[in-house]
Image (tube, rainbow, N blue to C red; front, top):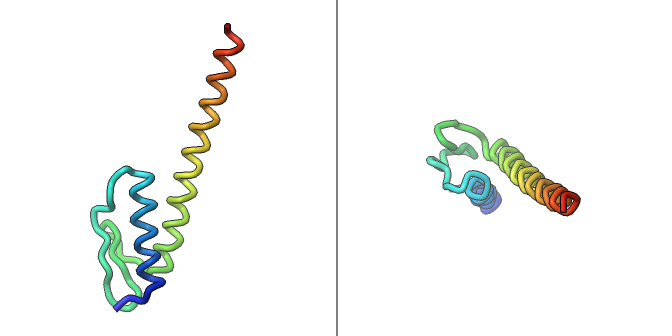
Length: 81
């Protein structure tokens, strides 16, 4: 049985994956002794925690780029008027 912390990490990973890719992970299965199977890859829960942080950074970076692009496009439209 997984502890609460491990279950939270798995839940956070699923949420981050959903945000970034707009779909659920194909496979997210709890295995024995702190191991999980994520889309066919076997990894420790601590590695999944790191992967979750990377997904969250990517999502934040993507949104920041979109916001910057929007500001630049508005400025360009304003200058061309």
